[in-house]
Length: 158
Image (cartoon, rainbow, N blue to C red; front, side, top):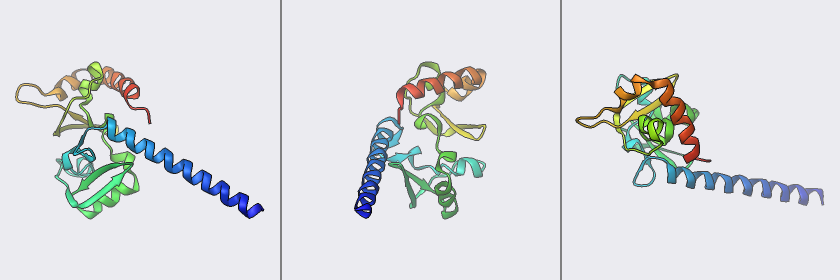
């Protein structure tokens, strides 16, 4: 009887955990900036932002999925680093433009090569011929970051 109760408890706990992970995955896919509904950063290697002088394009041969989001890496070492601590490398605000998130809470596409790392966190920005939002972010970073943090919490509720 005790064994049956223990098995039922384990099944219930595991099922709840799987449902929570599935729900989180679905919400992440819905709110994150993704190509083809699952690919982060247009295939750029998220670890390369931290370990190289500029971001590198990833390769599907070094793909990893974290909570429903697919990341490509340029090499096995970067993939391994990511898998050890994914939250250390994931971009802020689901990969949307940090400036737009702070300015008015909108989800704006980014140029994966326009970025900034502040306090160990990756921020991405929109950049076109006439508009580089990284410059606007730098002009009032603390205020915009605080606003972006608050706006992102309203949008993404894991």
